[in-house]
Image (cartoon, rainbow, N blue to C red; front, top):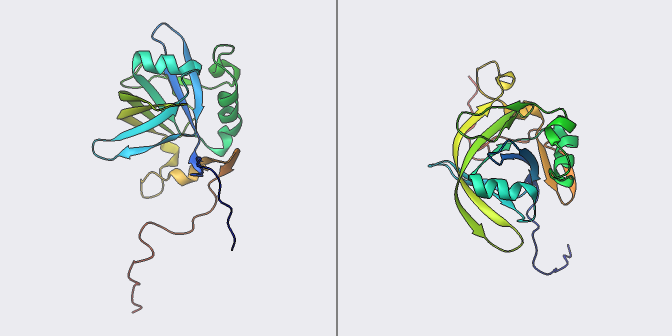
Length: 191
């Protein structure tokens, strides 16, 4: 199979398409869609988001040092796209999209009620890397929608039909193909 060689660029896809909510501490808030987000550490729990300094939410996050990562679903695909292409300087995205503001436990930035998971974050460090600045953040709390609890009282996020972003397109996560460790799991003997 032949492959083309391209100049260096970001081709790590798919990515989570998350809506990040922020507030300025003076009564204004906003939602920005971020695809450059990821887990950094389990203990202590940390994540990162990367945002262009020109974005309206950037100054809110930089000045308050806090934000909420709201996971997205197939049902939220329109809102996810809208929040990535419209500026909060021009429109109240919560109002325009009929999204519900919910209060978190630790940060002033609102959580999005329609999101199955909301992750409250406190900025630990900001890395000015070039086109984007990376906010390295401590996770303060995770809020999970109870409707995704399964019959064993375990959280089953896959029921939510999660959304990912890949090379300019939003995609559903599809069907389960395996579980962690299935490739080395010992087969049960038949009795």
